[in-house]
Length: 338
Image (cartoon, rainbow, N blue to C red; front, side):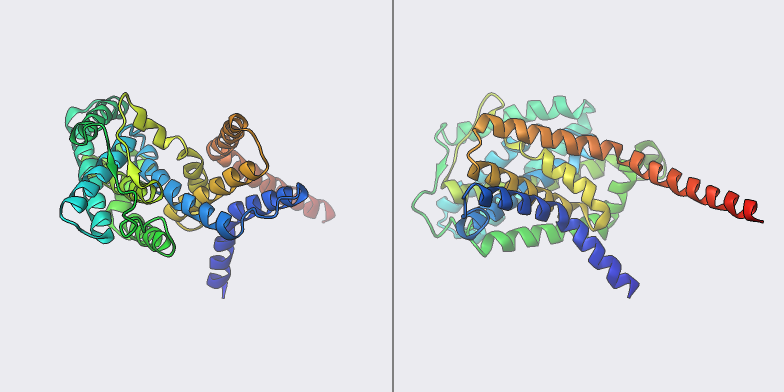
């Protein structure tokens, strides 16, 4: 019974942030006379954006939470999707092949990034900036700057539609849940994050773990790329580190995910963070807030969650101090009564 209560409590904690944000914006929209927020087509767009943003946030989280900032993830998204699309078109393959090929190339490109990082021993920001420019140039070269267009090939563009987009999300999050919570890789990841020097001294291979994290990041970016391709019908190469813009919406979901991780799982927490952000963006849009202010509001929210995530331990310390003080006062009162 206690275990069931704990599971239900944790489930409520995982969904409480996006649910609260949804209710707030629903009420604000209703007060302004907007009745189509968060229902029907608008809800489907919110959920689709949740999957897309969630994949990018997951890709960023697997390296950033271990102290590695990967600037190459945007270029990985573009290049893996381009390669998967070109081969699919060349051999007249179907949507499943498009997805699997893109995921394969994403994982391989991520593994290459991780390998180069571990071999060079340079700061990850420096290495991934260089790799991003290389990947961008490759994508630009093999498509002659035109990218890949699948507009009109609706049979391939199913990965942004229901139920396929939800199936894809559930499958990847389930795989990552098992990888992070039920395998040696997950144990090593938590150990390295808690104390890298101690973990390495106990025999954990930090370089191997880094390569796997980069590979997972690449796979998640490829999944996001396929969803984005299915929405737009095209993937366009970038130059001059233009691909770095893909990560700008990853931080709020990642911070929320880190907060919610203790209740269930970091991967699920990140998806809930992406849902929260998608609701915020949709709500702000329905309220008619100018795009410039949307960025300001989003930045403020990111700062709030960032401040909370880095100071949450102070709240715990305050509660512990308050409990100890209450016990001490109760003991003193008891002795005084005697």
